[in-house]
Image (cartoon, rainbow, N blue to C red; front, top):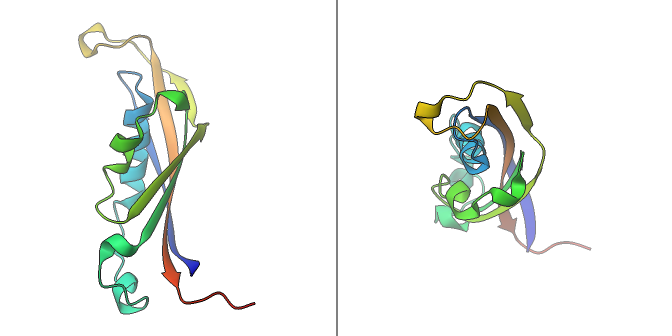
Length: 125
């Protein structure tokens, strides 16, 4: 089987308070998928089960080693999901507000790319 890309969506997410890279990454993925519909998965590609699509997520965020994979992927409603997290995004100096449990005055910005693929027939040589 050969994988064919159908859609690539990009998004951005921010955790202004709490300094949690998982929150920023989750918001970036949610933003990437917020305004799309995929009728081509059924009408063109012929899938009968939305969980047959392959959904590859790439996120760049500060402190990537702290990202909780299951939380980020939980925003995707369907598909065989995978996540690649790398160092990137941005740290912006904001304002620590003790009542919001800020550890410091960092705001974390994440960017995400969500790619939807399907498996098609045999690869030709």
